[in-house]
Image (cartoon, rainbow, N blue to C red; front, top):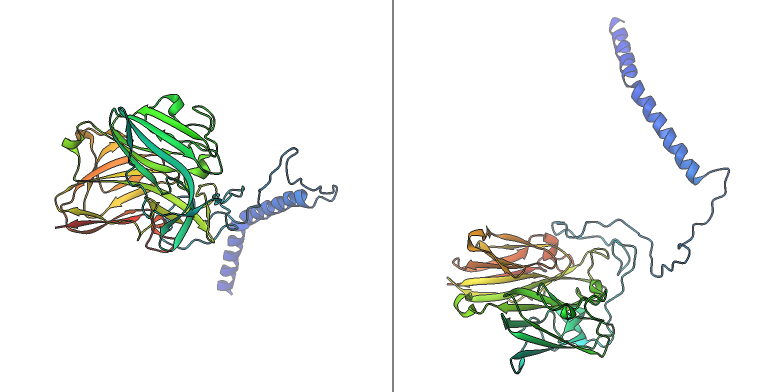
Amino acid sequence: MEHENIRKEARQKRVLKYLPVSILATLLFLLVSACSGAVTTSPTSKPTDIPSTMPGMDMGNVAQPTAMPSTMPGTDMGGAAQQPTAMPGMGSGLMQDEPVPSEGAVPATETQGGQLLPYTLDGDVKVFELTAKPMLWKINADTQVTALTYNGTVPGPLIRVTEGDKVRVIFKNTLTTPTSIHWHGMPVPTNMDGVSQPELSQTPVKPGETYTYEFVAKPAGTYMYHSHYDTDTQINPGLFGGFIVEPKNWAAVKPDVDVTLILNEWRVIDGVTYPAMPSMGEPNFFTINGKTYPDIPTINVKQGQRVRLRFVGAGQFEHPMHLHGASFKIVATDGNPVPEIAQLTKDTLPVHPGERFDIEFVADNPGQWAVHCHIVHHTTNNDVEPGGLLFVVNVQP
């Protein structure tokens, strides 16, 4: 009997101890329920229909969101398959993105982009020709994309000149939309800068029109060229290319191997290509020079050679590029040489949109070494590993 009284007293103490918390929780629940009911089931007022658009607003392609995005753009999902978050062609934003225009697109005759662009001479001016055209481009053996290209390849051809050269680029637009060319990072006259939306530098080059760009190539460094009209929907589908300005003493300082690597992303749903924009959905293919692994060419070098890799961020996502088998030094950033005393030794380098990094290393470790983005999702092809931003440096003894 004594033990029963002790247990009863203990139970009463526990009840008294937690009673205030229980009462507070109950009151809070009732308050939230009352507020919710006042909003959704007010007995004194009749709910009115909410207009689908604001007065005077035509929302056109607005779609209702169906799910929260499974990841933030660029996050590492460890290679896990992603569940679709919206209807095909829809991203995490509210506006439905349009497919890349395919009118007039034909299969590409070239298989590799970024090849050296030849030029002709007009006195002391180097004359290059670029044509914007839609193409059907294979980013790997199994995947074809609708691309907007310069001269029919992704990326566009590599322009390579010497510091101080006079350069003329005759540009023809055969797309169905206006466009322009911006010389990213290079100081050029304002009317040559290509910013046509808004029209700060020039009016956009309309379909069928030709525009001539002319400037002096300086200073030495790694640059790129890309569209600067409707950039969200023109750059990602392929309107970009590399532009290298060699220093005048290049013969004395050039490395044994020199490769330009342009990083980009694609979104392909049911065979239809959409711009891979952060606001419109996670890309599902990632390319280096227009190809995914295993279709990215291997870089073959001899043991002891000095290798320079020029990383160019043409897409809209960050890519931390990691080198196996060696460490490297950052010798230039955004076209500017890094003094030797300030050159960092690293094995991983984040490349952001618009950035250019030149890295160098001595290939003193024989073997086949991977170079890849360290966001694991970016080394997949449509969520299947291996793929994406991965290639091999083969160091031969």
